[in-house]
Length: 267
Picture 1 (cartoon, one colour):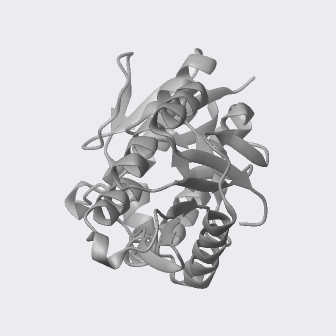
Picture 2: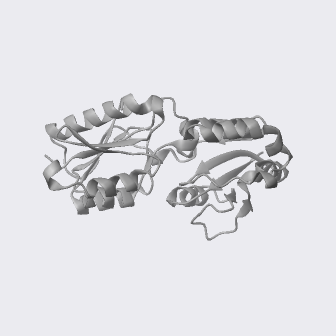
């Protein structure tokens, strides 16, 4: 029987996966922060061939990518044999969006006999069914704002821009870009009151065609704190397609902050 590896980065998700799968091996990439206190196996991103070989030597047949991972720097002088072979395709993927790069890396593992699993497959309770998860019921105006934010995300999806947008009283206050959701919420918090006509709603959903095994959107208590600091009424997430890292804590924080968390289909 094969073994699971967790390629771990920053955040609570890899910790939750490790707790649910104590026999899993924890791999990390040099220069990428992680929150594990247990033993980890570190490799360089520019020596992925060595890491894949190491995984296979240890009996790994499945890997799950988990946590907020920045693109590590590449040093061609450090490339192992595999990286030298794939260098032209890899550099092309690096110049493309995150989706293209992640698809390339998935193929790299799977072509060598290591299946890539999604965190939601291993911990299905991390996603939500449609309905109100926490906080007060959103009103009609807030649902209209969520609808417009979702339309904005669908329109931008082919550009591989981001997974979140904020709309208040029909006005777009911000769009998530490479900097992430927390940066978006800080930006919205700095928006002058004179430019706002309502509290506003954040919509968080995957981009069309996004491979959810390696890049499923996620929210946590930090997201709830960001909503409150930005003066937003709440967040609408795609049902079954956004991870809730520590759902009980999210529910408690949302109740304390007076913001809603709602899961909807067809976002």
